[in-house]
Picture 1 (cartoon, rainbow, N blue to C red):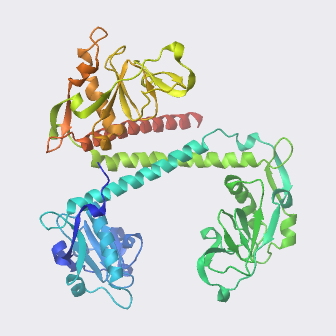
Picture 2: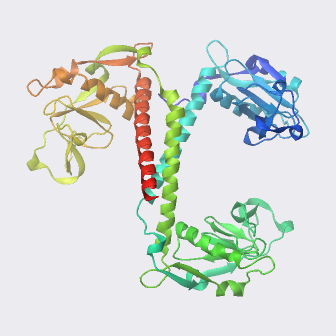
Picture 3: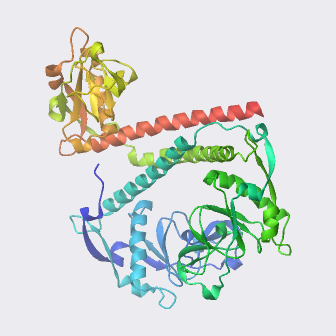
Length: 539
């Protein structure tokens, strides 16, 4: 399915009562008078969905779930409420019969923009009458009504894309961080002076709050929170800037240590520690050890410039007796890798449980139709390449094999069969066997290349669906009855179709994505069981 765009639909203004069948101010509860319980309390907060705790309340004070709430005073903000809840005073409730989580997310973004544009806030509270008389701009369908289906589909699309971005990030991290690391008890340790580890040790420069100007640059002070960030300033002169260093609080929260990857301005209550040999991961290793200074110093015994240069730290040492920065880096990478694997696993499970509902469709509810292969696919011949003429290289050479994705060699040869994002179908050898090739390869003359005529829908999932449909014809063909070009053209295959009778590429994609997710889920379940077994064994 092509990506949905907000410009794909018309937009019209609708009065709030035309959008929501119920608009009312909820009955309020006083959280101070409530005992702890299991009903969410929604307050006049602009964060965390308005949630402010769990309480026990009478049935009359419970507002039913699946609605949107808006704080009428303070900083107004709209939130979707998926559970029954109670609330504080001045909470507006919006509801209609078609509302769900996805549609609500779309509406919330519109409502919050509306609240800002109208200037609602502390001096101009949201009033029920004001809301009723106002309009929201929404997507409209052909009947002139709010296009609920578009809103839902658009949000689902965005969620899937965001989920995939997260998955891609963690998969890249897995590749980046993979590798074995020797345990801490297996390396040599040695005591080093700070001056042997850090080539630059410099205190920041005093900058009072009165002299700070607003800006984007982090100002690092002696706080133990927020990575040491105390403010964001615009001062460009009369300050000391650092980046890619450790910051050590020498007063205040004495000993607090953080890695600072980006450029910042340092307070005089902070000392910057710079090592020419440390990367991000080695710095994170060092930070945990440097932080031990908070056990030695306090508010009444600060870390001055003299003391810090005399300080020592125990670190892993290499064969030459120098700090083993590579080991420190690898060790933290391994720790990060373990966390990445855990996060990635949860992401996959989340997608399987939640996103599969988007993809799940019953085959019996889909219309099917016979198609000649030549009607839906371009069938391209390939080029003969004998073993004697093959030159060793990195390019896959696809032959009429039934294994290894059809790849029989890796060559440097290049000919007219060079192609990618195609289905390679054997008409000779292992007849009818076929494989999807997203990468660039060249193909034997025993292999036909199939490409969807509707190229915009030619993705991994539609080709894998096509693969199975073609394989279902395997029983008809054999070495003595080859699946040649002419027979391939006039071979019928069953495909799901849209209401207009065209191949339903969206269904093919969603069906194969669901199959993929189910396999991933099975693997993760297996790995979880194996991991549990290993842990028990060692225990």
